[in-house]
Every structure is written in C-alpha cells, then in structure tokens.
Length: 596
Image (cartoon, rainbow, N blue to C red; front, side, top):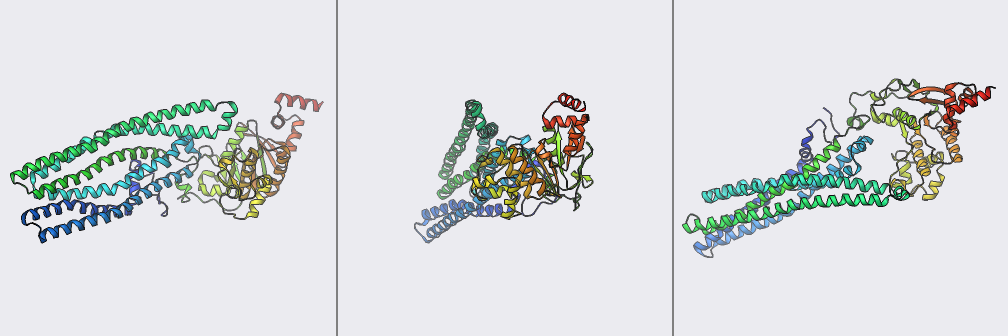
C-alpha cells in the first residue's frame, strides 16, 4: 500500500473513485466533528424552546403570573441565549469546513495536474480543468459546509420525536409520519435537476475552453481576419449555456417553491389537528403551542435535507468532473514516482550517465556536444523527447547508465536530464523567476551568466533587470527573446544531460553563431544534445548524428560528413541535402561534378 506524504492529503487511486466526497470529509473530520457537536447544542437549544414556552403558558393559565412562570421564562431566555451564541460559533465551523473542503479539492487537482503533465491536456480541454479548480471546488465546499447542520438537525430530530410522542401519541405520529412524506415528495424533483445541472456544467466547460482558446490566439485570428467568426462561435456557445441555466432555474424554482410550500401546508394541518385535540381535552393549550413550535422546528432539518439533496446533486456533478481529472495518468512515470517516493524503483547511479537508444543503435558520448539532424524536423524533435523520457511508452528502449530509463524514479531523471522545447512556455512573473524556476541557484550572477550564454542581454535591458515583469505566456517578448529566456533556464540547471530542441530557430544568424559558441563552451564536459540543422550550430558539434525514420544513418563531425558527401557517400549526401536545404538529386549532381 502506498503511503502518502503526511503534510498533504492525497486522493488514493486505489480507494474507490466513487468515494471522493467521503475522502474529502475524512481529510477534515476533526473540523466536521466540532461543527456537528456545536450544531447539536445549537439545534437542541432551539428544539427545547417550544417545550419551555408551552410549560410557561400552561403554568400561567393554571396559576397566573407565578414563580413557575418566571422560572420557565428564565429557562426560555437561557435557551435563546445558548442557541444564539452557539449559532455564531457553529457558523465559524461551517465556514471553516467550506474553506478546507474547497482548498483541499483545489490543491488535490492542482497537485495532480502538476504531476500529470501534458497527458492531462491531451485527454481533457483546458476549460474543463479550469472549471474543476474554480466552480467544482465551490460546490464540494458547499456540501461540507451544510453537513454539520444536517447531521446536527437530524440528531435533534430524534430528541424532538421522543418529546412529541411523550405528550401526544396521535399528534406525534401525525407529525413524525407527515414530515418525512413531505420531504420524500420534494426529493422527486432532485433527479431532473441533477440531469439539467450536468448539461449546464458540460456547456460551461466548453464555453470556458472556447474562450481561453480565442483569447490565446487573438493575435493570429486578427491576422487572418477570423476574430468575428470565433466571436460568433463564443456567442452561440454562451447562448447554449444561458439556455441550460434557464432550464436548471426552472426546476430549481419549482423545488424551492415545493420546499417552502409543502411544509407550510403541513403546519396548517398540525394546528388544525392539534386544535381539535385541545378542544377535546386530550392536550393542553401549552402543548398545542409546543406542537406548533415543534412542527415549525422539525420542518427546518427536513428542509435542510431537501436543500442537501440540491447541494448533493451539484456536488456529484462536481465530483464526476473532478474524478475525470484525477483519473488521468502521467505519460511518464507514475503518480507515486513523481512524488519522489518511488518504492522499488532503482536509484540512478551517481557519476557520468550515458544515454543510448537500443532501437536506433544510438549511443551518445558522455560529456560531448552532440547535434541531431533529421530529414524530418518533427521526427528528430520527437526522437529527442524520447531521450528525455517525456512518454514512457516511447522511451522504453532508451538506456541511461546502462539500464532502461523507465526503471529510475522520474524526479531523479528530471534532475539529471533536462529538456528545452523549441516553443518555450513562459509564465507571469519576474525575469529572475523565469530563469531560476527552482529558486535553487538563487544567485543573481549565475542567472545573469545563464542569460549571457543565451545572448539575452537585450531581454534584461528591455525589462529593466532581473526584477522586470514578464506578462502572461511571455507576450511582452518576441519569439526569439522567449526562446533565449527558455535556453537560459536550461543552462542555469547545469544538468548533467541537456536536450535542446531547436534552441536558436527564432534568432538571426549572428545571434545564433554567438549562442552556439557560448553554449558549447559553457557546457563543455557535460552531455549536450541539440536538435538543429543549422551549419552555425553544427560547426561547434563534437559529433553530428544524422537520423532518418528513427535509425542512425551517419555520424561524425560536420566537416567529416561534408567531406564524405563530396566523395559521393549516399548517406552523407542525404545529410548535406538536409543541411543545405536542397534535394537529394541536386546533391548527387553536385557530387558527380566534384568528382569530374
């Protein structure tokens, strides 16, 4: 059985997924227990007030304004003060339950999202995930807030039932049987309400996804004149959400009316039946007043039951959506592996770790600056990702330190092997936080040195230093600037193995030449794998590996491969065609001309 970190409760995948709400409740059972105890005292005081009022009334009718009336009046006042004071304290406990449940849900989803990585966005839309963190957490918190109120009310319901039956069996049975019937009739509207809420929730998730996609691509949409089309789609989807919300409101309004109207009609029935018993002498006038108070009180916990039905339907919808997010498994490693308690996985041995690929026959020289060149840039980029273990299904043939890379704990692999993509992801924050993402190096000089390797002096100047703010997704920077910030981030890690995919594709030739020279010099002695077909980068490579269809075709230095191409070597000719951006036929003609 996996043991989860004690500082952060984690939803166990081996526990039944249907019990997610129960898990949320267990995670805060102490707060719920305190809230339930306080609710019992508060509701008990409220429930005993009709008894004290009835006793005072009977005493007054029997002997006028006497000491007995004063005593019951003092009891009534004490119960009222007790109920009022505990009501305030109970409310604090209920709010605390709501906050803990909401925050626990948000942290659980956020924690899972950070571990699941890109596999999550493959299976679920971004808007669905955002809605899960925002609105779904709110609904789960609501049900935990109302739970102490419900449990306390139901427990006091039993106490009041005993009081009712002890004073009048016929009227007590009339109340105890009639109120649950009224509640059952109200609950018939819960199922259609839940179905319509499901439809509204799905429509809202689609609307959020459409909105985020439109905003993210607004510049591109304007460039092709497509913003009006996408605005129209958003408008249509928002109307669907509005219609779904109206359908929910229709059922909900009926439920609210029934929830209020049926108990009111039932109270009228109790007063009528009790009045007949009082006229017949079966109960006293004070008991009639008490029964009226009991009925009015008992309608509250039963109304709370119907209200909980309504909250529960929303919470179930939220639970289903949350479970869908939590069910996503990461493409690389496991959830336990990513939490750095990897169980039986072997530790990654210290010292130089050599990367190799059994499928292609590639074995990279440790400490070398290696450039991967492919006839298909997308294929070579995908091949580089397998080396960095981004997907275990595709990295099963990759060896690290002589063992399959999937046999090691993922946190150790991430510490030793760093990947920088061609299209970098930047976040809102300071330039320092973007480069020193782990806040581990913590040295401004080291951050500036990494930026210098990436030739990103202009970024520092534009933002006014390391404390300068970068806007969402780095929109305040150009594509080349974003790429260089991401490269500096990879350089700062000083990882033993760095896999860089097209790190200079968005910069000019002069800048690319400087970056290549600085990168080769700074990373000397550490394994660096760069995916690029630029001669400016290839010139600095200790070794160039030419791959095609996942197989190593040729390898050697850049000049060595060009020399072989001049001699007519077909693999080297194919390499030169990629580097020179010509066709294989043109390279063949060029080689034949050289031989003549």
